[in-house]
Image (cartoon, rainbow, N blue to C red; front, side, top):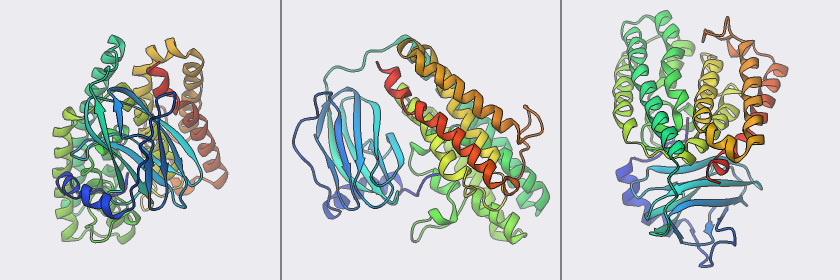
Length: 379
């Protein structure tokens, strides 16, 4: 789940005006000796050390000097996301590696992770494109197939959930809720790359922008578990959820996927766990957080496993640490479900404070080496 974004049409039309009024500034100095772009984010400014780089692999050295958590993105002109890093806390730094082809892009800093953000133009010149590694091409193709399979498998489950809502069957809808979300949770970074789908289907109440209509899974979750009733509006929302996810299903094949976006997406899935699932905020009414948690971890692990042959050649120690930490987190999650093939997890409100701390520690132990995966695959 990410903060709401405007439609790609609206975003593209308003980006220039937004930049003019939000204090976006730039320094015309070259990138540092290592070729990285220095990005300094604050509450009302977004400074970048260069506005032009050659095609290929680009590294953003990000520092948040503001008072709010921020998100930094590299964007296509139509507002699709090339790569991103969410939840960069005040006073913290992060290195983001991505692959870019020649063309026009923008770097956006989004203080508080709201709205379109403060934008900076980035021109990528012809330069030397990243060398194609057949193993990485194979990984990208396999991941694209995986993302499509997850979307295709999700639709029947969502239709079952929607049918139960429309029939007014609260218990059947509750039973179908968590399974309908697994494919989405496994591949969420792909859906988020489009910018406009996630806000429609996976926004929580506290993630709404002013004037935004609340739709999607979590709106229906509230009706089922907190309101304990299904209104006529919920039935129309169920139909809309199916429609929006069919749109996602059709667009998955058009997603821009690179080895670095796979690696960064795996890290983003762990960040989703840390900021939403471990805290119990994601599924706050149903307490089905552990099912979503497992979906995020499985999606991250799939991306890693596909990239592992190259990562292992380039950084065997990192691959070994990732294997170790994925296994440890998987084993810990197994304690909270009936068996290793079941997604019937313990209700998260039954998980104690100490147990949540243990889960959080395991996520953090995996997230740290996972943050190095993108750099390892492009060595």
